[in-house]
Length: 240
Ligand code: CTP
Ligand code: MG
Image (cartoon, rainbow, N blue to C red; front, side, top):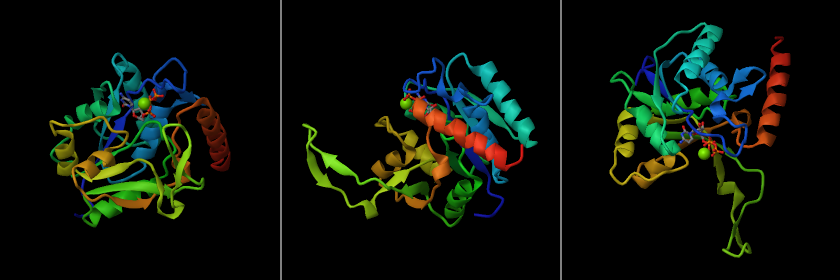
């Protein structure tokens, strides 16, 4: 693949954010007046190779989503085609709907959660570089600092896992377009928490690249507080 290969980024943003408990879909929750969706799109737009974005949003959020996308493009001074699709019951359904809007020109597809708004550009580059080298599926990972144990049904320890072989998985997860379309069009498609899980089930080798602690996922109120602190610190450093 050449350095001009078109990259499409699919952003699942249709979740309800129940664990966050802000009474609105998580992607539309604000950090210092920026929605998580705007922040995530701004990070996506910083990558030159990205030529198309598809966002899966909750029903009835189209005009709000359009305004957030427009704001991100104005902020980054970059305009590329963006499709908006209605999400589904599960993340898997939302991604499946989004993939219907893929273009023939999209050779690589990266799926990136709106819930990880601070993903650094370097992580996109790591994923795209690996796809350039011919990988069919690539995920960013970080090592785990906690000791992780497997438990029994009665919450007793079954065993301690070898931490050196464990990784925490992030997004963007990248795929050759045909590979992702294939795994999502299977008739036995089951809901999965990440896209690589489906690739694994289909027997596709999944490569790993370096993720980033900055790409943390916002799930709970504690995460949101950390995100606000992180954002303020970053803005301070950037002199804004
Ligand atoms: N997502 C989606 N469609 C769904 C469920 C989730 O597009 N039906 C998206 C979310 O918007 C988020 C990402 O998938 O960007 C990861 O999901 P998660 O962190 O679980 O977000 P929510 O489902 O919104 O949160 P919760 O599970 O607490 O309701
Ligand atoms: Mg969820």
